[in-house]
Length: 259
Ligand SMILES: C[S@@+](CC[C@H](N)C(=O)[O-])C[C@H]1O[C@@H](n2cnc3c(N)ncnc32)[C@H](O)[C@@H]1O
Image (cartoon, rainbow, N blue to C red; front, side, top):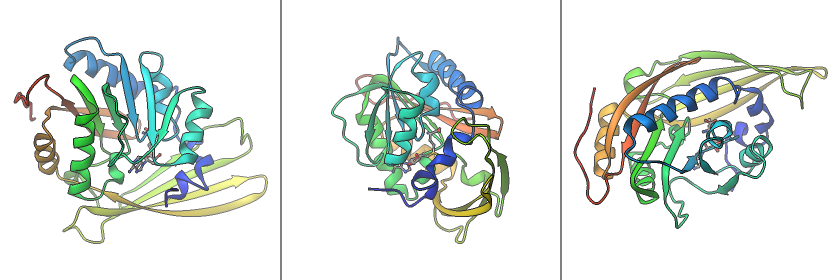
């Protein structure tokens, strides 16, 4: 099964040039490790990088944990292998995967936004619960919550040098648009302005994404059986809410920490 998004299929070569695994991604993963220290109750060994894409989080995670990457896109998993040779990976859908094993930690960075309905969100959360050991943590950083959504918000990013494309520069433009604020779906139009020795080309890639209010998140998390904490991460691209979900050993607990 190949994804519809061009960034994860025919244009996946653009992904390694968008964000430095040893820079901004490593900073984010160090924050994740600090949260594991803050909320964890024991020593943690195994991590599932859910929606791992090109493996930029796994790049740093694998120095600290035994990591498996899961993604829907074979092209992104190939990028992940290029960056992390030998990393265990599996091609599957985060809504329906069944690995028949449990992990200490599940990380979902910048991938849950591809979940566009509340039913699918519950399936992902239930699946995370099922794949976690007792006292395990699921750490979810959604791109955006409904409270922060801005119609036509436009962001511009610049490529970093890459040895496979030494003479290519890319400007990545993303534009968020919600055609129907009554549902949980919105569109993000990605435009890639690519300058190479062959000349200038502009590629277009429309992503259909999901956005949920914080209260929907909180309800779905509780219904899936997790306790949770809310944190915030400030990276190069701005502020992101992060949900730290805790699977209480034995039974469902109740020490929410809403902020
Ligand atoms: C923006 S990339 C983020 C990758 C990675 N987590 C990171 O932080 O660099 C989003 C990834 O989510 C994956 N994805 C989207 N929907 C998915 C699904 N239903 N199941 C598994 N992976 C999915 C895409 O294939 C893509 O590789």
